[in-house]
Amino acid sequence: MERKTKVHAEEGKQEITITREFDLPVELLFKAYEEPEIVEQWMGTRVLKLESKKHGSWQIETPDPKGNVAFRANGVIHEFIPVQKITRTFEMENTPFGVQLEIYEFERLTDDTSRLTMHVIYESVAQRDQVLKLPFAQGINMAHNRLEEIVSKLK
Image (cartoon, rainbow, N blue to C red; front, side, top):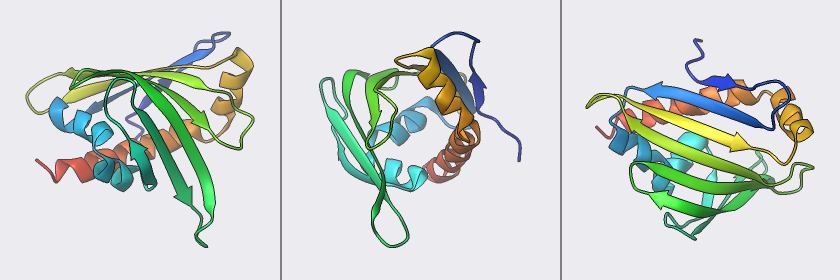
């Protein structure tokens, strides 16, 4: 499977940049991050809360096959500019990872294509490096593939 999502991590920095071009209008790409029903579909998780506005909060959880919570994450939305930008915090519960800052920028390339640039800042270089040891790049690429597949049906 081709990896369309690119993860750039500069040595010694506590941040990563993730970019992906989608065969989706920018309005639909943004909607995939704004509407709880769509987020649930492409992320394969439950959205407990998603207040798509400045000073809003969000919380998601993913159950294991027995219905127990396997993963839970939450944060606060600090900036919300429709079809342009979302700045939020991201915290995974019950993990050694601290809070990270995420800046999502949505860009129109053509009427039918768009680009998402995610700038993720971690508390330390060590924390960032720990995350990169996980199957992080593969997972985000798979999620972005699902996003494109699901949201393209909304065209």
